[in-house]
Image 1 (cartoon, rainbow, N blue to C red):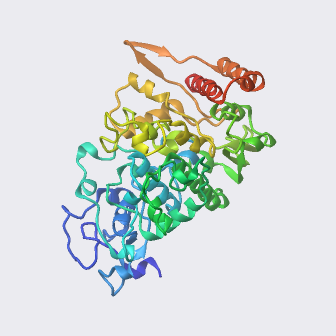
Image 2: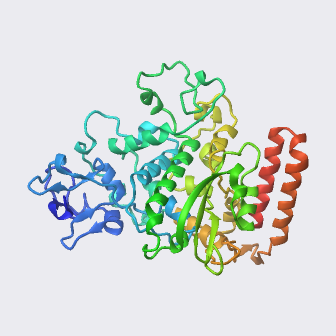
Image 3: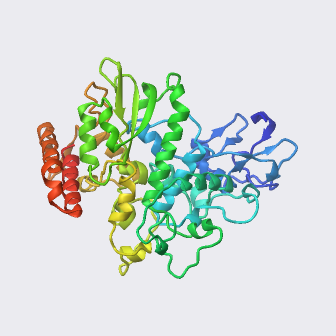
Length: 478
């Protein structure tokens, strides 16, 4: 059916079935007005994503069936903020944009990111009740619909403002299940753990439907990294054939992209990458234990590939904050001081990692290794220290500052598109950031020496600490 065959809720109208109530103080959503699609009759043709999910993942009604959810149409709405996939594909531009409707996979990813960021279980973000999801119509809480001026548009990622209780409908739960089936996790003594997790089974008996038990576990970093990788892959498959006609795009979709490949660490030497990408690989992903860590490599034409716009190959640089909205360590320990829109009291003073995650021990390495063994990412935890020199009071300000002063876009032939040009105010003085090219080259030499002469003489833990230290130095020099 065509969009003109449907009736849509008015801006101030209750979108639930048969209410026929108009009240701007109860039903008007500022996010729908700002991010959604409103027609000339002031009807919400496309709501924001959160209003759509609160209404069972559906919206509007067929003509002659006003108020009957059986005749509503499924929709993902419009995300009320920025998203991780657009951040990566815009090359971390300060104003990322996309020219495609949000996909099922992107909505699922956003809710999984929200759950991990707040240390929720899968069951907290899913419709697990009997019956059809779109028959359970609803609206978000008033704190979301009508936020105070002190809490309006101060977020970067749309998923950070999902209200607790808004969940994914069954059609998107099915998408999630298909994605998680592909998630592989090898564990020693697997009988101790709930499948595909690091969480102890304990006295629980696995349900006949294993999903029932799995939904009662915490969302883990490896799960979200896996969903991110699959989502990025699906968006590239959809958009690459159309990059020549996408308008108003920044970063990679402003180039002529011919194809992409997902390449494992052990096979990356077979690609004609610029030196800056090779160095990034060496310093962001230690060679031991990460032979199967994956990279997204784009092949295309444009100034981001080569100065003369000739065809070339480049790595899509993925940051930890792209996937998690913060640092990898923070969504394991929940210790970051600048984590906005996160629920309070996740970790009590008496709790340790073992209790927090229901794991076998207090080692956080396993939870973080699930990420890097599958996907090479750049750590940005060094940015936390830089925030001590500025006074930023909201999530949007932090993320914009990070991109403006650390990851500005610069189209050049060397491909070193992370450009720094800013001053940090310390003790009332201004210190210019120096050029660190020679230092980075020396780090590369050290990494080669360590791989050739040192790694076989030390244990695995020591080797990883050395590589982590080199990675931190690399980030500091950037």
